[in-house]
Every structure is written in C-alpha cells, then in structure tokens.
Image 1 (tube, rainbow, N blue to C red):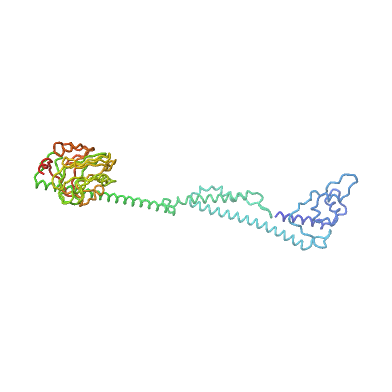
Image 2: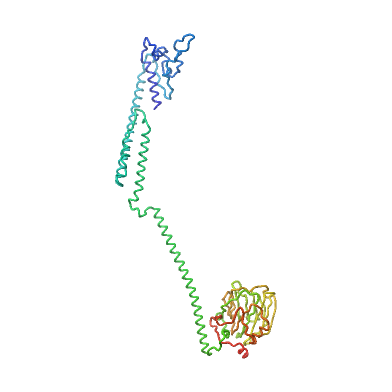
Length: 486
C-alpha cells in the first residue's frame, strides 16, 4: 500500500509543472517557481525531483569568489520507491499535459484505492457484527445453565463499545483493536471452559459413564473374582489335605481297634494275662506277610556304638526273616538283622554286611545280642549268653544317624514301610532293648541267664512304647520260665 501511495505522489509531482505555464516574472522569495523556471525542459521530469539538491543549485548564477548559494529545493527531495511513476508519452513537452491513457490509469488507481478502503471498512463492520452475535449466543447459553449474576454485564458491553477506527486505504490507526479482539476471544474460551466443567455436575455425575471409568470398574471386578477363585482353590486344597489326613487317621484307628479286639479275643481264649511288670510281654506275628509288624514309638539318637538284645522264637520254615530293622530318611538299611531264604543271618550297618554264625531255626526261645562300635567297625554276636562271632571293618567310622524308625518283624525298603513278605519274621519276640555302648560279655550272660535285670539306656522294652499293626498281638511273657520250658 505504501508503495502504491508513493507512486501516486510521484505522478502528481511530475504532472503539475508540465500543466502550468511559467510566469513571466518570478518573485525572488518563491524559490520553487524560480527553480522551475530556470531549469531546462528536459530536467523538469521525475528525474529532477529525485536528483540531489546540489544539482539544482548549480543551475543559478554564482558570484566570482563568493560562497556557493544555498540549495533551493532541499524540502522536495523524494526517496526512491519500488514503484515507478508513469512515463510521459511521445510528443509531450514542457507545455503539454498527460494523455488520455495516463488520466484513465489515474482514475482507475483512485477507484481501486476507494474500493479497497470500502472493503476494509465492510470487513471491520462484519467482524463487529460477528462478535456481537457470538456474545449474544454465549450470554443466552450461559444464562440457561447458571444465574445471570455470574456474567458481568460490563465485560459484554465492553465488546460492543469500542469502535473500529480506520481511514481510506489505511488499516486501523492503533493496535488496541486487535488486542480487544484477542481479549474477546479469550473471554469466550474461558466461558466455554467453565460451561464444560459445570456440565458433568449438572448431569448425573455420580454414575461413571466414560469408557475409562467403565474399564476401571471391569478391572476391579475381575480382580475380585480372581481373589475369590484363588480363595476357593486354597479352601479345596485344604479340605483335600484334611480328607487325606482323616483317612489315614481313620485307617490307624481301625487298625488299633482291630488289634484291641484281637488282643481281647486272645485274652478270653487263654485267660487274663499273668504279668504285672510293663516289660513282661511279647509280640506275636503268626503269619508271614507284609502287613503284620510292631513299631517302637521311640527313635534312636546319633550313636557311635550300640548293643541290641532280644528274645526270639522263630516259626519260619526257611529263613528267620527280619526280627528288627532301623531306617532313616537317607538310608533304609541303617541297622538290620536279617536272615532271608537260604542265606545266613546277617547284620547290616549303613548297607554294609557282616555274617553272623548264629542258629535260630529250632523253633525255641533264644537270647540274641549284637554289639558294634564305629572305631574300626568292630562287632560281636552272642547267642544265649555266649559269643559266637566277632569281626572288624563293618561300616568303620560311621555314625548311626538319628530320627529313624524301628520296626519289629519287617524289613524296610523305605522309611517306615514298603515291606516284603518274603523277608518278614514269623514267630515271637520280647525284651527288645538298646544301649549306646558295647556291653561286656558278663553283662550279656547275666541277661541270658535271668540273673540280671539290666534295662537299655536308649530303648527299653515297655508295653506303652510298642504298637502292633496288621494282626500282630501282645501276650504275657516270663523270660526265664519260658526259657526253662524251652
């Protein structure tokens, strides 16, 4: 726009001197007219107005030796603009005016400038109408959602109070109009934000309807269901374990009841027991099978030597079977006394074997003792108070492990079970006792002759310390009397 105005000014400057006749006499005070009259016709165009002031001053008279005259046209110097002034046509001179084409171009430019100014004014008016319309609609919407007191009237009135200044071909004189429009838009945005914040409160805000809240509710519900399912599974597992425990307890109770009934039947058949001491009893295993046995309630501590003694009466046709076995979790054959098939009687310690030269197949009562020490693995075997065998290197430097299970009448392949009927003991046994050292031969002889009542310091033969299972029974036993009878 500024370039266009500069072009108009240059056109007016170039046309005005050409269309006015130079006066005959020029007053000395009118520098403009004098300079125009003194210049040649070729220098009165647009180039003369754009030239420096010194060029104009050189056209006048200069006194010899005096100072140069001051410039005449310093206030008419124009700055070059990008737009060029329209050139004069051919044949124009200093006394001729612009042609019809130049006048038509000037009128077109003036009309275009007027139309531009009118369009800008109309645009400003339309912007004002749009702002008023938006303000009215927003006021009506806001009045329907909250009280009229919430919207200050001064702010709304301020949007319509300021006019839009402007002139022909110029933008608004000051930037406050633009700032006012920005403030109005910002105020509208603030009102819209407040309305959006108030809408959920006026609707049913207590019920979450957004997809995010729905997903959170479903996730919470799934977690609750998973917790309930896990709790039910744990409850079922506990009930199953309790059922298994109850089943085992019931089986144990049934076996005890059967044993009690069998003992009662035996008492009725043979009369009441004739013993009063707690150790005056025997365990009877009448049939060779894998379910009749007796179990000691007490276990062994860690031992570096031992002596085991008992009374035995075998009724087997072939081998003696297994009078006793001691098993621990890591070793099923920790201590075993075994005669299987045609093999001789053997003492096993930590699965190491020593053969004992004992003979117990005459179906009579015999007092049997085996002694062992970890030092050099020395061992000895006694039958009826006499030493029948001895040796070394039987599980040397091995310590008997504690917390095992002692079974009378069966050989253990696992801790406390997995019996083999071919290795079972058939007959009667009594006075099973354990010491934590090797007894002297005289002590063993006293036990066999019934002249000593030495009790085991690790395991003692007591009615309350022995349980019978599977049909094995307890009966009265007098060692010396039955030994004499035998």
